[in-house]
Image (cartoon, rainbow, N blue to C red):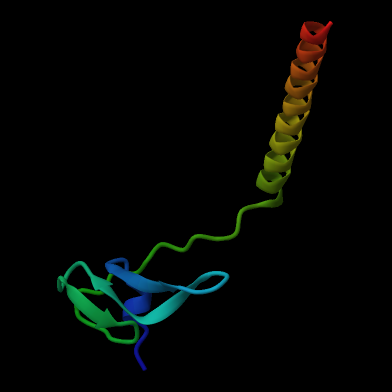
Length: 91
């Protein structure tokens, strides 16, 4: 079995079907070189490896968590101001 299979190629885009809770992979995809549908385990001489994308580091997750916390605090302040303005109008 060769390492230059289509699912590892940059020119391959896999097809997905809609499942109940997620999108499910199919065994077919679109090859931009051949301009046709191909099987994921096929191969050709135009193979070009996809760049490796690793998992995000913990610092990114921490930064995103901090941003979400700040957004939640801002939302609480805005809702509190909105409720106070409604109470003033009632008086």
